[in-house]
Length: 162
Image (cartoon, rainbow, N blue to C red; front, side, top):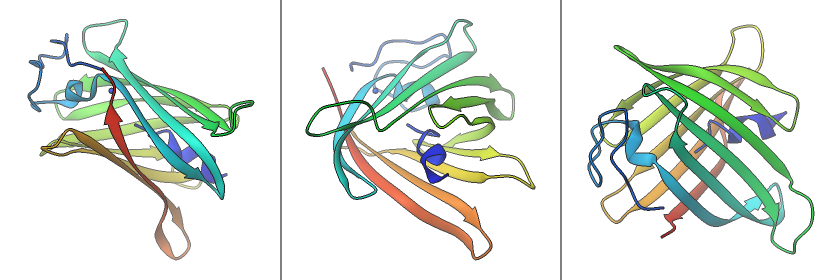
């Protein structure tokens, strides 16, 4: 179920966060906070992708809400929510989605990029990368682990909404 991987998945004007981030810098994953949108292709269907990053319920948390809606309107194609917790050595957390999946998350922040591995050995596994560039674009790339190795299945360039 490749829809699951989209989640580890993917944000309006930056605000200082409880994770120590100062608006406009990229010292940690709180640089993602805000709403990001893009036109996207959801497995052959023209769609609108949206990623909302926000502070979590605790100062050491950040959350992600991800949706893919048909461009022509109608019911969501896919939706997922995640919670990340800041640790000394990175982030961990969990992901749940409209496909019925619940996955553990393990992530690192380096060079304006959040790299998340999701799933467990022996089950479905994936990797999602959220890369911020100097122009303010967030590129999200998703892979799933197959018998042939990592296979990319989606890449979307998002723009921050004001």
